Image (tube, rainbow, N blue to C red; front, side, top):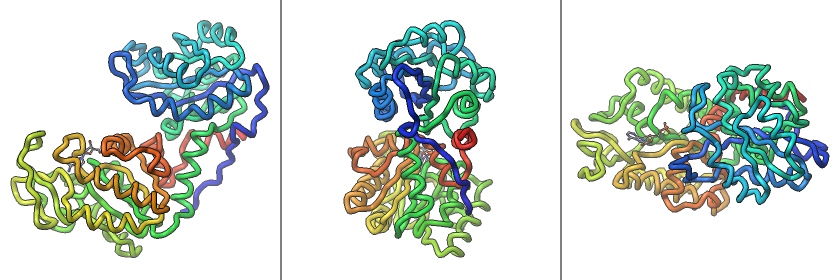
Length: 404
Ligand code: AMP
């Protein structure tokens, strides 16, 4: 597959003068509960870019979205509780502005001092944002001299703050986006072999395209999670009451055929943890084969699968993982996913390059006790990393490239 050549300018290649105002698109779509951020990883990930701009004595205006307020003001999705986190992490005076455009934003931007930060209210309180509206982008750019894109998690969307904005300001990419692209590009264009991809999660339908494109580059494709049952059904293996997407069985057959033609080793679970009912205190049993007996639901991979998958993972020089191996949110069904997380960390320690994407997978990794530092790169964008690996031209990157 030929990939588009992108012309992207890095923030460090832009001559940002002292006192200039820099608009930075960040991905602060963090979990919030009772005004508290339960996981501030996404804020910390932007530290390098923001501290770089603070060092340059720039005035920093942060724009971001939170949740899905659907173009209406909804206090539940306000970014205001994040202000103190940004201030603590960046170690710079941080103000909050109750709107990202209009008089109030213009006024707040003009009052900013050198090295100070202004965090603006949720972009998605305005319906124009998701419509990639040009006049909204122009308003965002108002009073700013430069635009820095650092929101990898939003780059696969053509929104005003990811696409149209690049028409109104000299635009570059921040350090987080650079790191994301560096690792994903390595995976896609020059993976060291053996290259092992592990794909799991609930739905085959979400991941058909990525599976098809991975088959052009991987040596081993491991499929786990609920997705595996659609593939087992495609081979006439009994799946009991497990989650199967009947309308995707034909697609699964095509993927199996492509793996065969491309000489890719396709691995499905050799055994399963099964229950009669999905509940925390359900009595679990392990199957003796790939088949799930009638009346049972597959909820995790079994020990034999862990051993087979683990052996391949430990031999890998490149690993891409997206999607859990079972319903890891429930402790009795988490062993498969947690064991795979540990194997990926071990392979990384032995020299493999590992890239993990998807909110659920990173969540599972943390719960397994593996630290993000034990993985080469934990992508902040689940959807964006999948689309990048699929070979799609991400709208935010296309816009940045065109603007240069
Ligand atoms: P995805 O968003 O497609 O990566 O799917 C993640 C979800 O898949 C998680 O919430 C898991 O609980 C779920 N999942 C993984 N394995 C199974 C399974 N065997 N049955 C039902 N759900 C599963």
